View 1 (tube, one colour):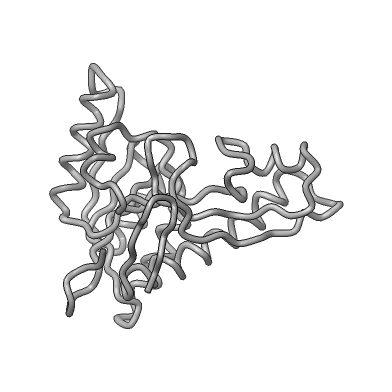
View 2 (cartoon, rainbow, N blue to C red):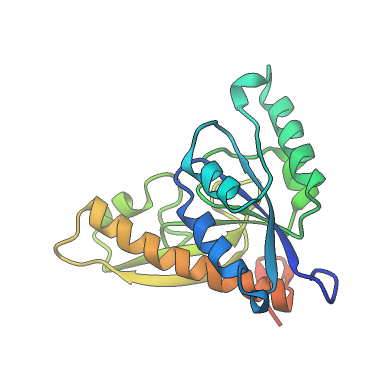
Length: 207
């Protein structure tokens, strides 16, 4: 899969908080050689820094709050419509703290990516760095993957290793993983944008 030749890959970024990964992607997209442009930023809550970063950059934003819908399925349909309106080639979860539903996944299968702060399939879920420390591993890291219907179970695009230091606590390890995962996200979104990709079962190939 690849965007149409001769134009930048269209990105929609979903955020729930500070937007540090969004900011890194926007910085990268400022270089035409990167091959991508952020055409929309969505959030599940108002008043977050990620939305301000997008607005300051002149990127259209939308907010779809779960509590504004009687059912989670209704929220999923509304989120899907918002993202569809932006006509993205890739959708990126950049600290988006909501699990999308089946309609969203059906529409954006093989085009919705997320990053996780552990080396999957080890330590899925919300507490990757904490779980890695408690288990006593010597190496952890970050995983970039295409989202499927499971929790952190989709086909893996890339991984980066981060050593666990004897002096680490959850906060210090989390911060070093964040730096590595942000760099990995920017690198591989650019590669996907410029080179395209295929997903065959669990194997992701970038030509």
